[in-house]
Length: 390
Ligand code: NAD
Image (cartoon, rainbow, N blue to C red):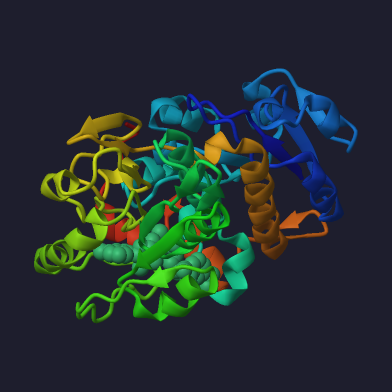
């Protein structure tokens, strides 16, 4: 069987699905590998590094799709809507496609892969169980995003992060507030702390208090009854307008006392809850900064615009769209390992088995042998609805 690695097409998407160091792992599974020429270049992996490990490079993406039994990508279908139609046309029956597909946000685009008779697995749907941790690409990419958010902020702020005692006087440390202490939020806390900031964080899951403290940050206690804030898959769920209204009121003072606020509260497949209003922004000190990691889904700040930098009330609001792609070398290395670990479940001695009795395979498979098999996606599109190609 042949694994094909096409180049990514989304503008600014500099990651590659498989890095050269993971090629031996694929070969050990009995797979051969072809890569589109130049696919890893922007992530720092030239063709020669693949060729050295026994990979064949092919000149065109059409050739990759024509030769591959398994296509591994970073983005496809709903995660690359601009190229989804063209790419779908290149797929053929029995092929397996694994990528970020944005199936909860663009369920029809992911479901439309069924027309081609393929099996398509979405990395966003890997369940949050311990056995799947090494395959959880959302977590590994969130780690990168949390780290980079702090660096962007540090480079944009009019203040330094650490406390400095100099002959010219003492500089007080920057104050950083992180909203949402999941994977990205905790990494943001840790990175800001390493740079010397005084860091505090809040999450609706009170259980993360210990994790926040373990990276040297202070957990902000708010008198809010969150009840169950996770769905059964371990992801945050929407908590309702009344809850967010109370949260905003209680958080306004915390937001105002910080120089930098990093927001990370995303709800899978849903617009992000507004946790910082324009009025709260107006209450911040001039020169303060917000980095909104939920920008792609509308943002946690009312004034956020995805992929833009807005200045309002003398506060800068940055809404970066795809931060993992801005650290493509390490982001690709982590994503590649996530894919390898998933494939290890499915490939033995060069033979692919899509075992729907395995919870990880069942939950992450959107389309199998040309049918939409994901219960979550069928719920979203309405089971039995014919899926148009665009
Ligand atoms: P996420 O991206 O879905 O959400 C980010 C964080 O925002 C979450 O911690 C969430 O509780 C928080 N949040 C949501 N609404 C909020 C609000 N109104 N105010 C404040 N915070 C809010 O989550 P994530 O970072 O991907 O993961 C969350 C947790 O899930 C992780 O910390 C980890 O413990 C767990 N997890 C487990 C596995 C596994 O077992 N395989 C894998 C990944 C994550």
